[in-house]
Picture 1 (cartoon, rainbow, N blue to C red):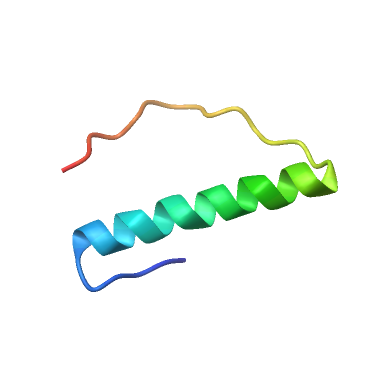
Picture 2: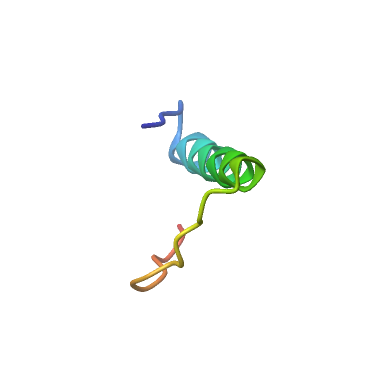
Length: 43
Protein backbone atom coordinates (compact mmCIF):
# COMPACT_ATOMS: atom_id res chain seq x y z
CA UNK A 1 0.00 0.00 0.00
CA UNK A 2 1.31 3.47 -0.86
CA UNK A 3 0.12 7.02 -0.44
CA UNK A 4 1.12 10.54 -1.41
CA UNK A 5 0.17 14.15 -0.91
CA UNK A 6 -1.13 14.27 -4.48
CA UNK A 7 -2.24 11.85 -7.19
CA UNK A 8 1.15 12.26 -8.87
CA UNK A 9 3.03 11.54 -5.61
CA UNK A 10 0.97 8.41 -5.03
CA UNK A 11 1.64 7.14 -8.57
CA UNK A 12 5.34 7.86 -8.17
CA UNK A 13 5.32 5.88 -4.92
CA UNK A 14 3.48 2.97 -6.59
CA UNK A 15 6.10 2.82 -9.33
CA UNK A 16 8.92 2.90 -6.78
CA UNK A 17 7.31 0.10 -4.73
CA UNK A 18 6.92 -2.06 -7.85
CA UNK A 19 10.52 -1.44 -8.90
CA UNK A 20 11.83 -2.35 -5.45
CA UNK A 21 9.70 -5.52 -5.35
CA UNK A 22 10.95 -6.61 -8.77
CA UNK A 23 14.59 -5.84 -7.88
CA UNK A 24 14.28 -7.86 -4.67
CA UNK A 25 12.60 -10.79 -6.44
CA UNK A 26 15.43 -10.84 -9.01
CA UNK A 27 18.09 -10.76 -6.29
CA UNK A 28 16.41 -13.71 -4.56
CA UNK A 29 15.89 -15.64 -7.80
CA UNK A 30 12.11 -15.52 -7.41
CA UNK A 31 9.82 -15.60 -10.46
CA UNK A 32 8.33 -12.33 -11.61
CA UNK A 33 4.78 -12.77 -12.94
CA UNK A 34 3.98 -11.55 -16.41
CA UNK A 35 1.60 -8.57 -16.54
CA UNK A 36 -2.01 -9.43 -17.32
CA UNK A 37 -5.02 -7.35 -18.13
CA UNK A 38 -4.83 -4.04 -19.87
CA UNK A 39 -2.83 -0.95 -19.02
CA UNK A 40 -4.78 1.74 -17.19
CA UNK A 41 -4.72 5.27 -18.61
CA UNK A 42 -2.57 7.77 -16.70
CA UNK A 43 -3.89 11.19 -15.87
